[in-house]
Length: 624
Ligand code: ADP
Ligand code: MG
Ligand code: ZN
Figure 1 (cartoon, helix red, strand yellow):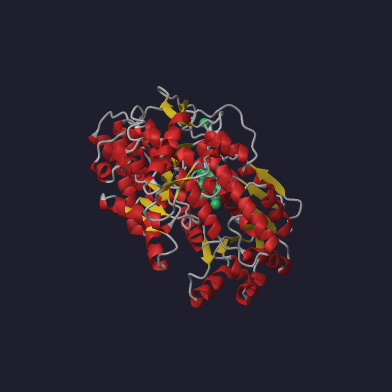
Figure 2 (cartoon, helix red, strand yellow):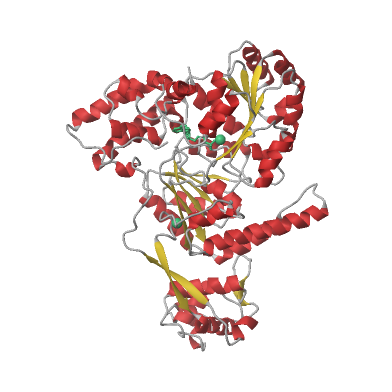
């Protein structure tokens, strides 16, 4: 079979995506290759398709067990013989798997980098024909990245020891020049074909919401309630935040899991599985969660706190919408996040790094935090901000992000700021945001009477403002350093360095957001569920139920049975027989054989019950 036939037969896709063919062709011509493509771009196919065409075995080095398991499940579902060898298997299982592999049972074998150092594995490798070594998540080789894995450095020794040097290919989503050079040099790639596709993920909608404290909980809750069937991840900066938000959501009856490094490994595994298998479609987690999560149908990623860097943010937010369908990446920002960020950096440990480097790394971390803060504050196109940071040329605003859909009104609040300081002088730095804002508003609250705030000079001085604006003002003053907020459990506001406020040309402003009327979505994809009518949505739901049932029978995550995108395409195409079913994006021969009949029956049943139902509004082929 040629590569296009393989793509159709095993993976069920009609066309290659950007960059895929170049990489596949280079590998097939015997050249080394590096592919730098964003998350969800389809890097796996770039080595899986040639692996099926090359004479021998392809070894894929992958950093995480869950990642390997996911990939191997997907491949086996597609009818490709693949296996993994890692520490989740017993010694006996490993010996068995290697014996099978030596007999040619698998075209693709996933291994953890540590495995390459074991004598048993080396012995196996010297007996068989290895056509290609693929290094997935290749940025793990670089100390510049966040996920440096020392054992990745051993890969090249392994390759050098093989009797015949195989093709070496490397894949990553990390774009920086340093990482790319590290990959090329450390892996000793020979004149590699380098393919870098654009970093833009058109299906992701970015937005930043300026809200603080418990109002963040309300936002998250509201978002989940408005999108009850959707799967999503909520990232928090600290374990404490994870636990608190988890409890809040759980008490509201939301099927939610949590994940952080303070939990036992069994608990973490359970949470991760519950999420992957859609038993709890929502998960609250620290950034310890996610690498190795290829769940394709996450429809939103909410950051409860500002992450430490754009690199982190893009990776974490990028876990939304891997199936190419529209998804949202929302960052909830408050001034306190900057303090949390700095605090976490101070706590960060640099084991085994010499002191000069530590200083350098600390400066770099602070700079990255600053870039992130600017992202939260910019009024420019968010997508362009991200792309520019990663070194891409940008053109017009995207018209598909929070900032493109809003315009901002700048309000001069310099005089108000001075009143805030007066109020803090009167509270003697003893109270938090609620009391201070309430006092300035002149709110009629028992607590204010109790502490005597009603007799302050500042009481009611900002009564003409909205409470939300006063909160925004205080946050802005925290950013400017005029005020600081203590880190203690009961955090209070204190006067910071206000010399700047005293000068003639002092200026403090807030930006208020106004929703533009009827935003036009330029990059609207035709075939998201939005293109389904209400009848179509009903069918989609039925297909999802069927998928869930099959997934349970097979002990498989639902998205590995079929992606959301594939189900939506079924709704759009309404296949009536096997041939038409093969036309659906994501249906290959193996899956047609395993599940085709049941999905065809479900669709036929739906059409019989709803004669003449119009299920979709848009027609059109998948863009690729
Ligand atoms: P990553 O680049 O992050 O490793 P994956 O290889 O996991 O991305 O692919 C992401 C998703 O895109 C998968 O669901 C995969 O099946 C799908 N995909 C890959 N190539 C194509 C293609 N040519 N057409 C349609 N979908 C594709
Ligand atoms: Mg990948
Ligand atoms: Zn934009």
